[in-house]
Structures are given as structure tokens and as C-alpha cells.
Length: 561
Image 1 (tube, rainbow, N blue to C red):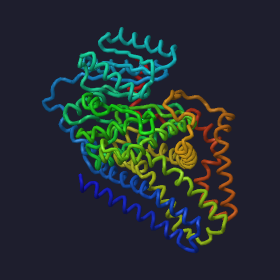
Image 2 (image 1 turned 90 degrees about the vertical axis):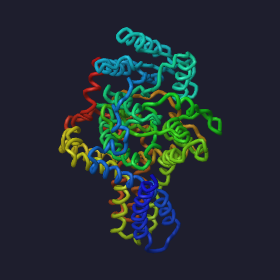
Image 3 (image 1 turned 135 degrees about the vertical axis):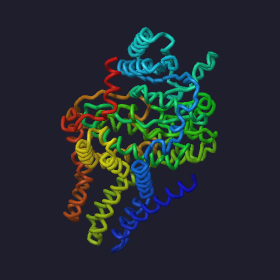
Image 4 (image 1 turned 60 degrees about the vertical axis):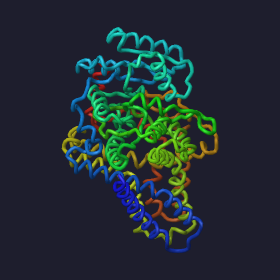
């Protein structure tokens, strides 16, 4: 693995050198000044992150375009599946619930159990509903749903348990279930398929994960990638396009250099129970807080103990729901920021693997760098208003902007390229025209969303690091349903974003109309944040096409069941 990581570092270094070289050509003319120095510092801080994004995307795209079987190229256990394997190990299908509507969860579970039975594998799997629900009415609905499943599939195929206290959040819920199974002396399960309330996996996808675990006894976790459920809301639909294209390439490139020290994302993954119980019991953080985001820590502990954690970079039959609107996306981002920033207390913990700690550092920087990322916009505006933009070279500036955007979105752009060049991938997404239509719409969506989210993330990070609890920073109930956002609600939440955009635009205009024109793609999302939030909460237009054709059948079948 040493040469792979050295090659990746070389790619990162090359990307960083190009970016910093363009920044030097752009900012060097004229006097340095405090604003130029601050702007340069922000670019330097963000350059390694952009270089990593581009390097991982390039590696992933090279594998996906060059390998006959790109998935097996980074997950060798796929080639050993079915070679003299014993009967399937007993597997718990664990679904964690917390104040969720249980009907769609039960419908998806029914579809999965029926599909496994049709494949002749019903005996090996038990659906386990693990509830931390606090509302009595929802808990009663869960019990009724579990009883209906038990009548249909047999009492031995369905298990329901509810905790009175949400100790340790989801990680505590899962470990409590595993401990209860061990204390019962049953030794029932060897593997556990971890699903969230919005997860949906096809029988074939589940059986493939089990087969991979059988083929490689040292695997503790296999994490499947996932696409979004077919979405009726425009925001979720456009989010799905970029997520699917980018994650496919990113996960392949990351798996190439991380190998058996890959990440765990907490759902749509299969876990070997014995090492998980032995290694992944989580306590409190050094500051006394409960751990919000458990998955990276669990993966790092398993890696340190010599167990393998790998990613399956294929979302076929593996799905989750995307936030239906911009406000819900931001609420989720605040929760994730709170969880990721907690990792800063664990970066020196020697009980965690080195690559695992690097993954945790990446998770921290994903949020911690956003104040410096967003700051480049107002700093540029102030530089322009103070007359400093007169010394900035326009050609290198345009190249710098294009290079930065290309590096940031490299996995997604290269994923779209793969869909256009590989008939199997493009055909599964509806053909080349459908891919191009969706990619163009998603590009416009991303252009408006990026700066808007950067401001929101920067504010959330600063509040959280200052120790001020943000509303929605805990692990509470997720709003998964859609519904059009009303103008009043949008205005109340996003008027500060619009005001910030107008102020920054005024600063650019005070210095140079050319500079304002160049900044408009970044400012448009801020200025138009209120109508953007309203329009994207509406239903997906017909011209955008049906999302994720691979998943439509499985999802529809689970609903019908």
C-alpha cells in the first residue's frame, strides 16, 4: 500500500502546486497588504482539501474507466465469493428507530424479507426493530407494525425492542441490542446488517454483502455506497444526481489507497458482531459529552485491532432518503457538524488506527475549513472596494476560479464523464441525454447552493466551537416527508443570507463592475436564497426524468408489500 499512498500524495501535491501557483500569479502584483495576506492564507488552508478531492477523483475515475470490473479491483473478496463457502451465517437486519413514522420502514422490511424468502434464504435473516422512540403513540405504532410482520413472516423472523432511555444515541442502541443477545446465551447472530429508518436494500445487495463477509474472514465491516430513493421533491432529486455521480468515483478512489482501512458510515453496511462488540464499545468524550457520530470511531478501533474495514463502491440495490428541502438539509448538516467536530478530542487516541484518525481529521476539516472557505468571498470584496483589485491579474484569476471549482467537484464531474463514456452506467441512468440533462440542472443547482451552504456551515462551526449549542445540533427526529416551503418561512430563515449577498455585492460594485460580474456566480445563491429555497421545495419537473432506475423497482416493491 505504500506506493499507492505515495502516488496519491504526489497527485495531491501536484494539484496543490497548480492552485497555489495560480494564486501567486493572481495576488502577487502590487503591495501585499493585510487583505491579500488573509486571502492567501485562506487559499493555502483550503488547497490540500481541494487537492485531495481532485486526486481521489482522478484515481477513482481511472479505475472505473480502465478496469474490466472496477468494483472487484478495489474489493478483491468479490472474486472469492461462492468458492466452497458454508451455509449463510445468521444475520440480524437491525433497523434503528427514534420517533420515526414506522409504516414505510415496515414496508421496506417486508419487501426485503419477502425477497430473501423468494431466494430461499429466509432462515438466515431476522428483522430487528431497535427503538429509542420517546413518543408513546409512535411506540404503539411500532409494536403493531412488528406484530403484523411477525404474523406474515413468522415470530422467529421478527424481533422488536424498545429502550426507555436513549443512552449513547444510535451506537448505544446497537450495542445494547448486541449485549442483550449475548446475555441471552443464544449466540444467534454472526453478522448484523445495519440500516437506518430511511435505508432500503434489495435482497441481492444484502446477499452480496453476506457473501463478501464469508469470503474474507478478517473483514469486520463492509460498507456499501448508496444512492437516493426516487424523490418527488426537486431539492432531493438534484441532490441525488451529484451525490450518486460523485460518491461512486470518490469511494472507488478512496478504496484504492485505503484498502482494508476504509470508512464506516453507520448504515447500509454489514458488521461482524464478535469483533464489533469487542472493539467498539464507546464511552464519553474527554469533555464528558456523549459521542454523536460513532461510525468513524468504530472503524478506527477495528482497524487498530487488526480487523479490516472495506467499502463496496457500488450502490446497486442500496438506497437512502435525501433531505426534501434546503431547511432540512441545513438541519442535517448542523447535526453532522456537531458530531464531526467532536472528533478533535480523539485525534491522539492510540487505540484508534492511523488511517481511521486521518478519516476523522477529514471529517473535521470538511466543516472546520468552511469559515476560511467562505471568508475568501468577503475578503475579495473588501480588497476590491479598497482598490486592491486593480493590481489583480484577470487571466490568472479566472484560471484560479475555474481550477478551484474543478478540483472541488472533480469526483462528481468525473462521475458524469464515466456515465457518458460507459454505456452500462449511462444506460442505468436513463441514457446519455438523461445524464446530460440531469448534470446541467445539477450544475446550476450546485452553483447556487455552494456559497449559501458555506455561509451556513461557517456560522454553525463558529457557534459550535464557541460552545454555544445550536438548535438541531443533537441527534433528534429527522423530517423525511416533503412539502412546499412557504414564502414566510423561507424569508425568516434566509433573509440573513440574502442580506450578506447584497452587502458583499455592493462592496464588489464599489471597486469594479468587472469584479462584481466575476463574483455573481458565487453571490447568486446568497442573494436568491429565499426564492431558491421555495422553488426547490416543489415537485420534480417531468423533464428531469426518473431518478435511480436501478432502485425504483426495489423501492416500489417494498411499498407495495
